[in-house]
Length: 351
Image (cartoon, rainbow, N blue to C red):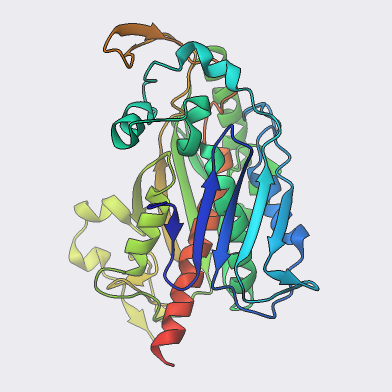
């Protein structure tokens, strides 16, 4: 289906709906002969799966992967990999009362306008459940990138107006909001519980740092590295904005402040965020994304139904009060997909 595939050489196609039988992904362009333990992929799936803590949706999906092709005797074969995850905790009946109503903030109206039909059960294809396939594919790409010396880490930088003031990478996976500041993390957790009790939600900012990328990646003019990363991040349903390096603060800077000067050891600053002219410059790639508040809230809201009638709606069900904690592994996965594709495209350039 158009719009469900990403990549030129390293290519992925996700499939499945939120309350369908399964979700999954097909990965093509995988380097053959690479040792790949399913447990490596499962580790990333466990970071994304629902029901991890009191600050995420209580839906219980174990997201156990089933690799049905592309692996033989523990190594990649170079042929397409198909990874399937069964949906086990579906409750479509939770949406029966609002199946004809357009939920504010959701893609209900736009999907119906585009296709003339929509799956009302948990947003169907527009659900965050779709990202499970992305994370599985991203784990494959991450394994290939590790062989190139590339590492990727994302974290919650701000949530509900509470911003991290320190950076400690070691604590990111030690708190349920995946914040880089343990003090801010506790405040964020309190904020989420407060909003959940009020039937509301909040957004935030997730930052991603990528190290070890060699200079020269990126395809000018239209397939710039930052343009591809932006497309990948904005393809995640809850993401509404992105900035690299100094980002929007650059609008208030002078050229003498923003330009990254060089000396014999490399760039002295990194306002460009590791990408200049759409091509990696060897410095750390840094970007931040704006994540909107979760659309599903239980507070009464005004809307319209498919018959054109106005009505008040409340969305009840199992939803994340904030998307930030579980979007972190999705951001990393999408960055992995972009970079592995770019590495392969660069290699083809010099064949």
